[in-house]
Length: 448
Picture 1 (cartoon, rainbow, N blue to C red):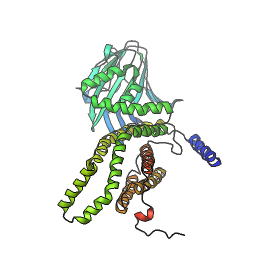
Picture 2 (picture 1 turned 30 degrees about the vertical axis):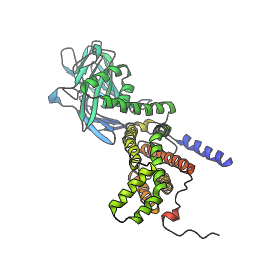
Picture 3 (picture 1 turned 120 degrees about the vertical axis):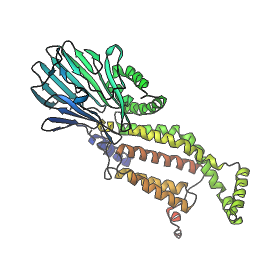
Picture 4 (picture 1 turned 180 degrees about the vertical axis):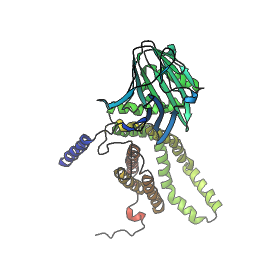
C-alpha cells in the first residue's frame, strides 16, 4: 500500500512539473519581419506593409504555399484608397500581447493596419484595419482556378495542392464586402480572420467556426473533400474530442489507443485462435516433416491434417491484413495532430509531445523493447521464431527513435496493451511461453 501511495505521489509530481511548449519567434531583417510558430510562418514586408509569404508545417513537411508576386497582381493585404491609390505605411512596430500573440502594426497617415499572428495550432491569424476613410484591401490567393466567395460574400477562399498537400487560404469577416481578390471597407474599420494551411477540417472549424459548413461545401465542389475524407475525419475528430475532454494529448492518446484496441479485439481474437491452433498442431506437423522428405508429399499430408482438424492456415492471415490499413489510419490520425501537440500541456516528463529525439524517447524505447521481448517469448512456437521476433522488437523502436514523442507514446501504449491481452489469452489456455534460456538454447539451470 505504501509503495502504491509513493508511486502515485511521484506520478502526480511529474504531472505538476509538466509545462506547455508554445511560443512565437520573431526574426527582423533589413526590410522584413518573420514570425514563426509550430504550425505557421508569416513573412511581412516592413516597408510596404504587406505579406510576402506564408509557410505551413505539417507531417514533418514544410510547404511554402503563398509567395507575394507583384507581376501577378498585388495580393498581400495591400491597402488602397477610394481612388485606387495604394497607401504605404510611414512606420511599423511589433509586440507580444498577454496571450503570446505577435501584433505587427503598420501606421499610415490615414490610419493603421495590424497583423495579429496567433499563438495557435490552427494555422490562423487576423488582420485588423483602422482607417478614417473608405479603403479596399488586396486579398492573398493561391489559385486562379479554385477560388470562390462564400454565401452573401461572407468570405473569400482559394484552394490548391502544394507538394502533395491540400492547402486552403480563406479570409472571413462580419464587416465589409468581399469580392474576388478584394475586400471593401466602407467605414475603413474591420477585422479579417484568416486560415492559411493544410486542409484539415478540424483546424478549419476551430479557426473559422461560423463559416465552416459553407467552406466544406466549397471544398467538396473543388474535389478537396471526398467520402474518404469523412471516414478519416471521423477518426481524427474522436481523438480531438478526447483531447478536449481530457485537456491533454498524452491522456487522449492513451485513451484513444485503448478504445481502438478494444474495437479491433474481434480481429485479434480470430488471429490468436489461429496461432493457438497452429501451436496445438505443431507436434503433428513435425512428425509429418520427419516422415516425408518429399516437399510435395509433406504438403499433401499437412493439408490432410488441416482438413481433419478443421483448421484453415489463412484464417490467421486475414485478420492481420484487415488490421493493417486500420492501424495505418490510426497512425496517420495521430500524425494529424503532431504539431498541435506543442500547444497541449506537457505529459509527465515530456514537455512537448510534438517533438522527439533519441534522448527524449529513451523511456518509450526501453519499455517497448522489454515488452516486445516478453511478448515474443510468450507467443513464439520455438526458439528460432522467438529470436526472430526479439530482433524485430528491438529494431523497430530504434528506427522510430527520432519520431515525435506523441507517436512513440501511442506505439508504447499499444505494445503494452497487446502484451496484456496476449498474456490473458495464453494463460487461459495454459500456455506459459518460452524462457529466455530456452530462446538462447542454453541448458536449464540445475534444480537446487
